[in-house]
Length: 74
Image 1 (tube, helix red, strand yellow):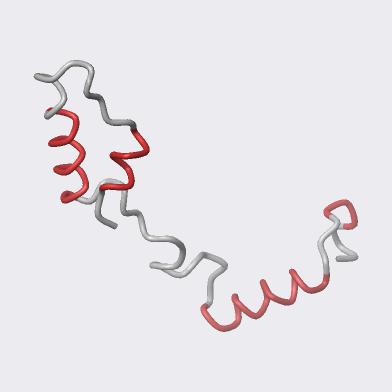
Image 2: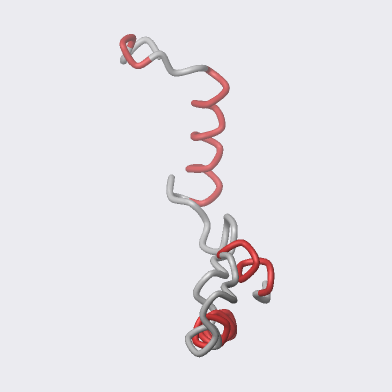
């Protein structure tokens, strides 16, 4: 903190960073940490494609993007 006074780092965040570096040897995030990406799962792509394509032959019977999103599998 004294070496970089313009950075405004807190002691707690530096301590957390040093603990992470000491325990893992790196400041990188662990693989698999964070929210899993589920938007482009093959099953979701198929469901959305089927719902969108089913509307082409029936004009005026649209489904909103919120309805399609709520109908997809996690």
